[in-house]
Length: 505
Ligand code: NAD
Image 1 (tube, helix red, strand yellow):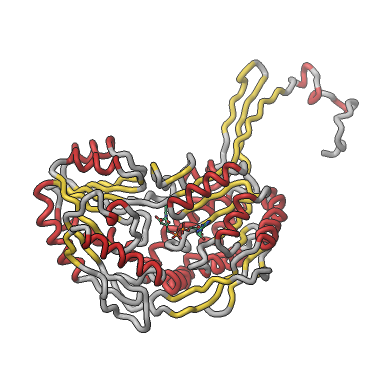
Image 2 (cartoon, rainbow, N blue to C red):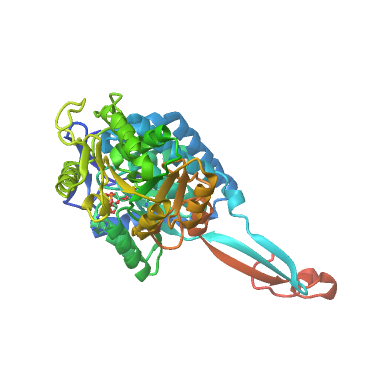
């Protein structure tokens, strides 16, 4: 893909008024592949306006018709998933199998949203008081904003938009300007699936686009995913402007390995969870907490496996691809420098790796530190790269205390064969998503995704029934109908009473 990528509004490309552009690169080669417009305030108005215009018609569209369109979208996505995976690899850098996995996880939310008619069912109570019935219904919000990060160009938007659309809202998606093409592809797929123009729109840009959505009076809610400082800002600004906000932030995820665990499995999983997508995952494990005698053999097993990983262009069958940008590569390398300088043992050094790729890609190879302490920046900061730190503790209690003291609370895992220890961990640990012998415990679409602490601002997690709740608002109806036998408005025969609307209604 080449040229300049424009916004998508009202079912077609919308030419921006901007003079600012972002550069999109292929991270495996370092080549600039296309440019993307960075929205002006006028662009925000135009794209939100298209969504606003489409809302009444989409809200009035029957659930049966909406569901048909969702099923059509699902079928098209199934048939063409590879195309989307290729776009993700070309702009993010993750290997094709990781990109295909991302698409599949997004597709699960589409499938969940296909059940919207069941999910939107309200409740009803007959004769709550004599002759009085009460029922509850949920209605869409209107125009909803979605702001997504670079690391999941398709899956993260798909955590939100299938449910938002199914529930009758119209959407403005602001993807990361580093990886904008997946959103465009998805917009075209919606059109092919029969979604009316203006229901799904894409606004490209940076802070101006984000601020425009956060303050726009027609935007009813914001679903944000990104780093913690921006998530906090989005939450505070959006709520100050009267919007419903769910803002998912950064992470520092720990895996506790008890001495009784299957250490080969734990090492395999540490490799997957630490180096999958080059560590650019909010559910990546970046800290392995080795308890007691687990330490030495575990580090040895992770070292052997990390040294065997092939780093290279994600289209060439590598195990691990590049980082997203030159800045990310430099940032991650500087953390490795800092960890070594702070006295951690650098067991595997990914700086200066020789990747299987052409050009000047943004590579850092798998990196493993041992004897990391909690005051080191490689522990305190979210590195967002292929750097795995092993922290040694003597007891299970120390491991849990360490996790609970961390400001983030996205995901965590425990490796053990002791059911009692696992159960206690699940009870005590202050983190939103827990894996028991599962390293990346991303909930399936019918559960909800979200962390605790500095990993999420707002009350509602993504997708599952919490997602349906987020994208709708409740109404409760209390009604009384007089029995026709006793006469009253509904018992008036012959239409003598003027009810104030045409007789044929
Ligand atoms: P980011 O915070 O830099 O960007 C996220 C979005 O915010 C992008 O659309 C970007 O354009 C916009 N943005 C960037 N700077 C902004 C600013 N100053 N003002 C307003 N908007 C701004 O995050 P990223 O680097 O794209 O993604 C990586 C981060 O996302 C990591 O911290 C990762 O943990 C987090 N993440 C979290 C989850 C989760 O579920 N909790 C999932 C994926 C990624």
